[in-house]
Image (cartoon, rainbow, N blue to C red; front, side, top):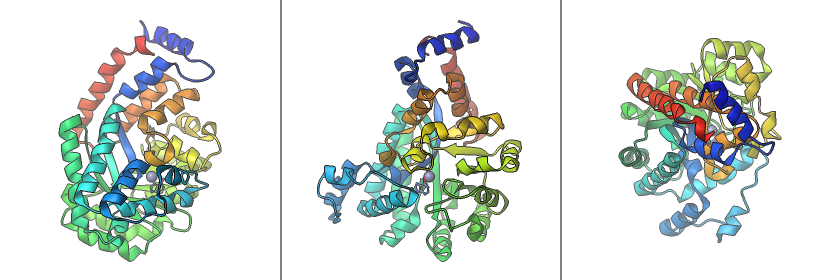
Length: 359
Ligand code: HPA
Ligand code: ZN
């Protein structure tokens, strides 16, 4: 089947109600990288209650239904309140290892071949945990998961921007000895009122430690925060970046400098960054030449892992070719070494050769 035949077949299989069942299934098998995933955001409510019981942590919710009733969010802050509260159940290195393994199992089922994973050490330190214990548990999970599922990847230490800057510096003191075991530094949590400029020194220090730099910007904050993340933090990718669309100068810069956006459709809908998935400016970013990737952010909270995010975009009319483009971007904008990128791009290419019949 020629490429144009395949496109026609794809269109024929796509109904007004969304992508075909075969196409939705094929999207799960498509090799991809996940570049925006908070490991604490993979804590499913069932596991949260199990860990609470195992670790003797008191939560205000006694049953799964009770806890589940908390998962409706008005904005970023209302999600963060629950997300930070549930993190208290994570107490041991085994908890962090098991959380990582549970994520990697799900990610593998969704075609993830490489994952760059945020963690929030300041919150765990505030909960009385040891930095090295947290890192050891997560790295052990990554190592076992790497052997089990063939997924490569690493950890991005994320600065919680609404905590004091000194606490970010303290985390960097702890991270310095282990910088070679980390992939990068990130910036997350409540955005408005906590501009990237506050963290210029932290990021300069992280860069001197050899860490890659990324930052959440333009999720609820303005386009100017994205510009600050580029100018002051030297961010190599922008996490979310939705409001970058408000500045044509900025989108031209993102396109020219090949700075990818790690977008998270289901997250943006659930946190009411947009009223509807159709309101996401993804197509406008593509028209302006900005590289978009698709990710899950905090899948246990937002109703789906990465595969569901790709499927949601298929359902609102993104073509198979466009979705393949997002997967390709995810690999080429990852921090994997060139050999691994080459290998994964080949996997994606081999998969594409086999796919027309499944579209
Ligand atoms: N935005 C900001 N902080 C976060 C997020 C997010 O989407 N997820 C976890 N921490
Ligand atoms: Zn995020």
